[in-house]
Structure formats: structure tokens, C-alpha cells
Amino acid sequence: MYLAAEGAHNPILPIWQEMVVGTISFALLVFVLLKFVMPRMEAMYQARVDAIEGGIKRAEAAQAEANKLLEQYRAQLAEARTDAAKIRDDARADAEGIRQDILGKAREESDRIIAAGKEQLAAERATIVRELRTEVGTIAVDLASKIVGESLADEARRKGTVDRFLSGLESTGAR
Image (cartoon, rainbow, N blue to C red; front, side, top):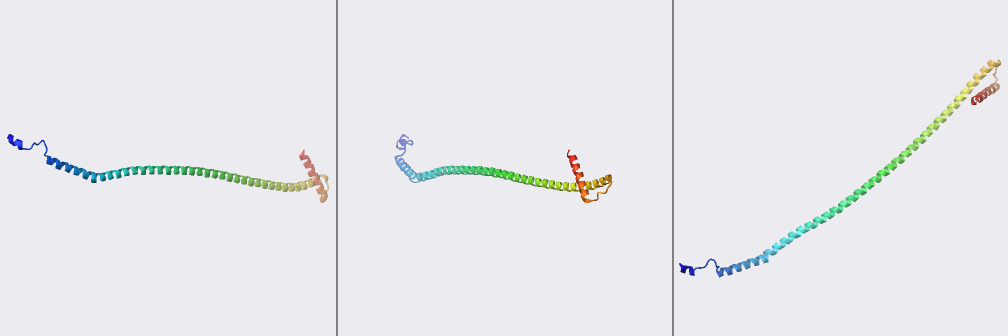
């Protein structure tokens, strides 16, 4: 039994032929991996890195563009607000001008109506005064003729008497 053990192979020590085949196989595997697989993996890795970095750069560019557009929008909004305020102020100024024009025209119309009314009143007053003079003159002549006892039918005398009577009334009324 001991002899069988001497000629037999030790299981702890590998066979040198297996070592050579294993080393050549390993070297061949490493060569294939390094020559064909690793460059593809590196290319895929680089493509992925480029895609990620490109995506980040595109995102940064898009963010910068968005910020630029936001600033333009804000500037346009501020300009629109300024224009709206200017338009509002112009409209208020125009409205005030129109209001003043309308008030001026109303005052002119009012003054014209008042002046026309005063003229009409003056004309009516003059008419009434004329009628009253005639009537008062007639009454005065009738009264005077009753008092004097003679007829004052003569027109010239009558007119002179009426004028003297009215002048006397006016002088008495002025005191």
C-alpha cells in the first residue's frame, strides 16, 4: 500500500502539464479580453461618460437659455407694465383735458344762456316799463283832467303832462 502511494500522484501538487495548459489558456484568455473585450468595454464606458457629461452640458446650456429667456420675459413684462402705466397716465391726462373742455363749454353755454336770459328779461322789463308808462300816463291824464276840470285831449299837452308826471315820479323814487 505504501508502494502504491509512491507511484501515485500527490493530489496537493498539480501536474506540470496541467499548469502549462492552464497558464497558456489563462494567457490566451487575458489576451482576448485585453485585445477585444476591454476596448469595447472602454468605448462603451467612454460613450456613457460622454452621454452623461453631454447631458449635463446640454442641461446647463438649456438652463442658461431658460435663464436668459426668463430675464428677457421679465424685461418685456417690466416694459409692458411701464407702457401700461404710461398709457393709463396719458388716458387720465386726456380725460382730464376732455373734462376741462366740457366744463369750459358748459360754462360758456351757461354764461350764454344767462346772458340771453338777462337780455330777454331786460327786453321784457323795457316792454313792461313802456306799457306801464303808457298806462300810467293814461291814468294820470284821466286823473289830472278830473282834478283840473278841463279836457287834456290835446296830444302834445297830454304827452308833456305825462312826461312831467313820470319825471316827478322818477325823481321821487330816486330819493
